[in-house]
Length: 282
Ligand code: AAT
Image 1 (spheres, protein in one colour):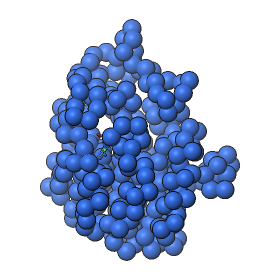
Image 2: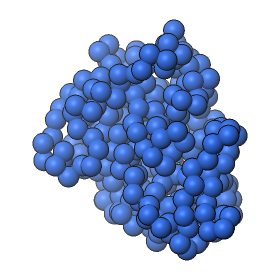
Image 3: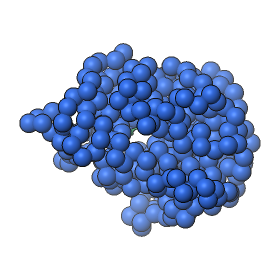
Image 4: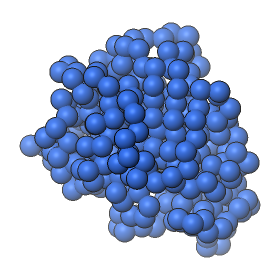
């Protein structure tokens, strides 16, 4: 924080930086895994930063949480068992729990400080933890996945970037383990970085996952406070030849309360500009 502004500088987005004006530092400490910062910003509500990287602002979090959750959830006809890796703020849980078909949601987050502090400083996200269908495991998602975690309809990996505790979550063995934990017809949706910055991460990941998954696709959302204003998702299926481009269900009541996701933007999210289509799939 310099002169009352937080600057998001990082080697994964060289030469650029998102800056937010800080009104008050709410919490700053070091957990077992990372540097944890919560601050109140002038115009973006409360903000969570891990190892210097913006994870959530209250102003635009819905653009990410709704899309990473509802694209796979609405691509499945009847999701009952859901697993979330990461996502300690609770925002993805909040979105998954909107689906009435869900009977159980397991969340595996590595950092208990993120969970506890989010309950204080990001209550509109952490309310996801209040749902009785939620079961919390505090452990490394990579270790959890390697150890026979059961059978899921949807697995969502809401992870931080591959520098730090989430590095293994961008590697093929983790994807193989997620795939093994899917029921037939199941869907994986993961934080898939940014097409403007990270095709060198996205392309090899997509091709490795394509070696064993039935389908693998890339969709994206716009979000002002993530690097370059966009973030994508790697979406893979087990036994779903048609992939996830078309929603299997629509829920008009839910769409009335959501702020980003609808059935039309679901389809649009898979349509890539030429530079990204070539760089990722050719
Ligand atoms: N909900 C949107 C915010 C995130 S949070 C990413 C979460 O992943 C963090 O809570 C972090 O503690 C957790 N995490 C990191 N590594 C692991 C791991 N190995 N196992 C389980 N959880 C982990 C995503 C922000 C994206 C930022 C884009 N620049």
